[in-house]
Image 1 (tube, rainbow, N blue to C red):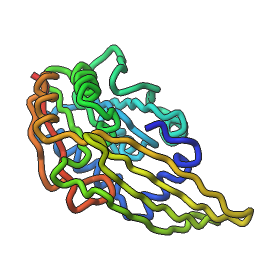
Image 2 (image 1 turned 90 degrees about the vertical axis):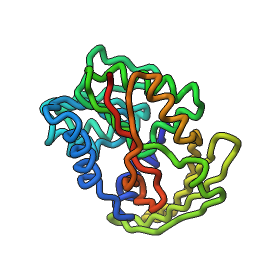
Image 3 (image 1 turned 135 degrees about the horizontal axis):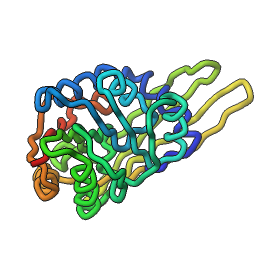
Length: 243
């Protein structure tokens, strides 16, 4: 999703206010990588967002890089991580001309490709950037059986002199979900509001595993990991190695 400047500016504060633990999540991913490739020293974070996971990865690996589609998110990441190579790119088509010991794509970003064809393209691109024996970690969106159609959520938080309300509504449309996020921001200058809509592919576990296998990655679903929003019914993480 190409987040606009308004959404990107509130993104980190919104998730921090909900208790999202970026360093803890990144550390758990590092452990999954080390279990499968103890000598890993390079990592690529696809759809790196504002760089909060990547900041921890940069402390754990000798070389890290990031790819992000949204210019607004990429600007924040570049200010946060001035020494890290960060590239603008679509996960379905990017080509950095090199490989890494590990590639990650979390925060449900992989589902933003919307279609099974897009999923196949994205996973092939990720696998193409893995060295033989390299580790791929992908966080899926919900599977059809644990997606809650019509789900609504929301909270209010304070960020400096701003008070922000964030509400969400998610509905199923065939093999996709439409996730609407509405913000209202109160500052001393007044109140503004805006809405963003993200369309996510609703893929089955088998569709993910088949696309990973077709990309040359032997993967498994590791349960017990629900990074985005701390969702109790999160599906887990796909973790695999390139043959």
